[in-house]
Length: 216
Image 1 (cartoon, rainbow, N blue to C red):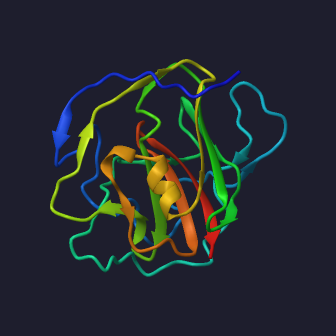
Image 2: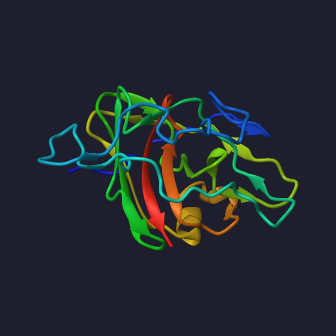
């Protein structure tokens, strides 16, 4: 009954910049506390209705493994830029976001659903950031080598209530590159480590997010 919604319209192409509300920093949150964005936590269980999603928002407590930072051996590597200003765990006034597990192993399948709870104008299914929590804050794990600037096309989708985006992919280097922003030829550097990761849908502001721990 529910399906992915793909309605999109072409807008402006920007070179070396991004569309909408953007942070210019590679740090997406201040580092002292992983849970400092808001107080939404854990799981949602029970019978599913038209607007409520079952699944997980993020794990309870602080992550057990926190890398110092992300450092790529390629000096020309540029991290994918942050494309939102504010994160909301698990959803917003018009969107609900859940993931199928709050703890997985590298290579396990991740299934995430973003459902509209009202009529909403938003970005497309490609607009997801993949971030790891480090001692320096949340950091995008993907990027690109070389001098070419990131170029984004302003696309949009219109979703009525109870429509959804659904992603299902192996949480591994190739899996996250193939699932989001496919046209940008991104890569992961360094390889994915154990730690707490989150998916942030940057096609809406504030940006809904879910998180899960990954073992390796």
